[in-house]
Length: 366
Image (cartoon, rainbow, N blue to C red; front, top):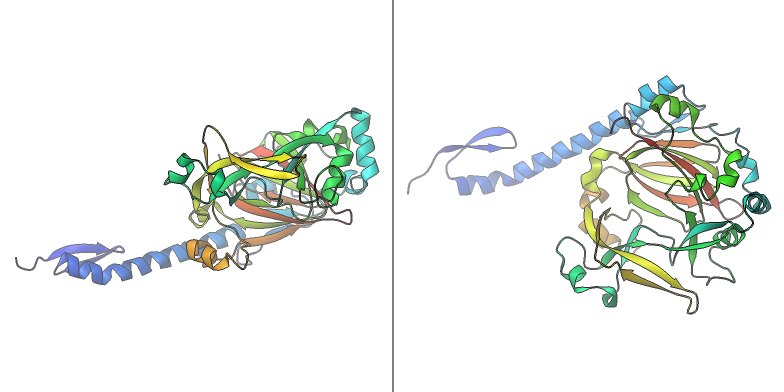
């Protein structure tokens, strides 16, 4: 059979090949390299559009007008930090005092209990290793998930606020619960307006300029009380998020929605922690019936033992542009646009705690 001459499209260019097999293999590295350059150019373009040439999350010294917020940030899906945003809240001075929080909650109901998430490591709703004896045949044989990781939810225990505060502040060193337990008071179910309604007078029920700009009241307001071990893994929300820090500091890693391919979202079997006070042990078990959760695979802070493996498995994350990093201080609000990926760590105050509120607004973009 003689040579066959035909056009071959590679990387958008028109080339003539003598043999499809020989020339395709020759130019394939060029095509791959061209696609890589296009992706890298897209990364840089998105960063300039998102945060400008500075590459930093913009800080406003005072709350914006509704028009400015909508025009400069919401419509552009651009995060920002607003300083002096909640300086008028009594919470800034009141919530660093245990006795105040206990008294305020007790005045509402003497037997008021709050939901506290318990884990052995401070990582709830996160990927953790699943021991061999916890795996089911279905989970082990699935081709859509890792055979060594699962999406673990915390053990939720109801307790009085004074016990919760003591447990959180001590980093788990409590008489009631074993010292290896890490507690995080949080519920993403509008918990501030239900479990913590006694504290409502200390905060605004909504962020006024955001409410006017977005044309709606928040769908949920959540309270977060954690310590230095509390960590939130990479994820995204379908809401406009106004995140207000009351005590301590919150450290965010941010990626725009266009970086979704760098998150390596995979499906993992859902599992649940159970804590047994008698034996002071956790048990992690797969949910039944088996359920899979799509979740970001990347751990931005791998240990020395796992770093090489993580970098090899997730090159687009570790070899691409760095995440946008920002720290939110007491009295500040982070505007986190919908669909932005974020990872959160925290530094506690002198009481050993970080307290924050977040307001979820329906996104006008969605």
